[in-house]
Amino acid sequence: MKSKSARLVRRNHARYHQGRDDLNIVPMIDMMVILVFFLIFTAVFSKTNILQLNLPASSNAAPLDLPKGLKLEVIIRPDDLVINDRNSGPLKTLANTAAGYDYDALSEFMRRIKSQFPQMTDATILPGPAVAYDTLVQVMDAVRVYQLPVAPFSKAELFPDIAIADAPI
Image (cartoon, rainbow, N blue to C red; front, side):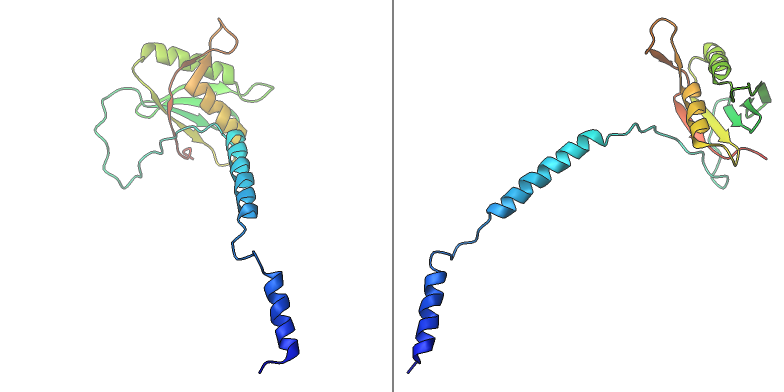
């Protein structure tokens, strides 16, 4: 025999849970819709400009069989920029101006080199130990492309395959 209070509890429990045997997935669907919208919205605005860099091979690796010719390097020092041939030595030294590094002269000299070596696409940038990141990016831009005088936003390719290493001391 069951007590009267047990029967009341069982009856109230049955009345309360009547029709609630299914799982309510509406809140989960709402959260998924919000999450998908958030991911799509942030993915559109989080695009960054990525530049492919080729790091030079380690000194322990076997040397590559490269054709003889110009091995272009740009050494960033605190007082100047040195355009260098790895095989023969410095080609030109660009002293700093009052405003800092002379990126325009670097770009112009790179154009002259490109006119003599049109098939060449690689260059190595060698920053010193205390070179600012902004300086490195501006030197990379001056070596990779130059501004065409015809249109304000058109650029031409110089040496797009850039490698980065430490500058010699």
